[in-house]
Image 1 (cartoon, each protein chain N blue to C red):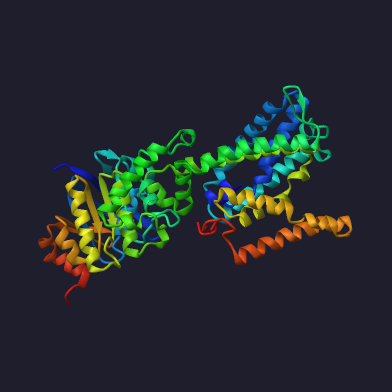
Image 2 (image 1 turned 45 degrees about the vertical axis):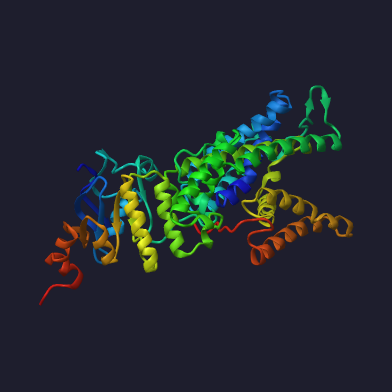
Length: 272
Length: 250
């Protein structure tokens, strides 16, 4: 998400759909087709990347808020498909019994072992993304965010770069979706609804857009921040909405007082 | 000498207004040519059509004998067509040196290049860019962000960017607007230097002393058409030009 929002400066609201596709691909392939962990995870990434490609070709020709509208529409369409393609996705019932990973005969069934596996995978992914985000490729992507016309005038095929950035972001979102599916063991369409978007956008914005460490910091803060709520004796049906209200409040406060986030660069996604 | 750019009967309308109307001219290789005219004459529209940002309704543009009328902006740039803008367009969040480096055409900037060891390559590109910055006295400013530079420095960076881009024809849109006389002298020297390196320059400008002193040929546009072209001296006394700028005698 940070690649697209921070580096490309594009208001991409279809992100939950992309990692939802990764999660469903993982779930369906590992249950129905008997894929083992890594092939299923990579396939999830692949399908998410494909979805990213399909979405990016029309969406990246739009500008500013219109990209937001188009990608939000994509999110709603994917939600609709997940609910209605019952033969494949079991619709609103969701897919239960998604297997936990087994690698070289070792079963990652416990939370602790899964945590270690996730940490290893996240480290590898972060390493890859760190390389990409500090490469000449990402500089060109940055020039597109800053001034696409000027970038074209110095010979950069801006559409190609944007699509590629979109595809990488989608690939890793798909991998993330797959991991989530294998951790939860159950997914349904509401796991990937627009509410999730608030959390991701908040993570990227408070961490700081176009900052590699910013996203990690943002993610950590956003996950940990509402944890104290557990210790306050509140009715369960109140805690859920309260979490979202807190995210919303944090987002608003950051937008007013520190729009670049904690570690971010100057950016304005609505200026283009 | 051979022409590098030929404009053939170019017409462009915006709604009912014809910004450029059957305009025809050509630019000689390795020359410095001025394109002048009153405000609204269609000069910047012409620049935008040459660089491909807008497409003409009619007519053809030839660059080195290749018809580029329907070619994308970025491909034109790769063919050797560079430009600067009237309202400066450097990348504000990139540093001065990065602004120059991104314009090099041999950067290892493909996605898969991200996984190669690029240290040596990066140092080489930085050295090259630093040399360019040094040539215009901006070495000390290399690590300042684009938005931290002064107006004049931004203008210089934009010209350098066109140079770093290895353009054989550089379109300069009002390179002296809003900068002080000392800097105007420096811009003049840079432009002459670019010519010595074999580049061709086409300048849109309102600063007459600058244009008359620098250009070998001047093309005058008025209401979308070119009304005169020739040596600076001829242009200064051309009745059509005087009329376009000052109005006709009653």
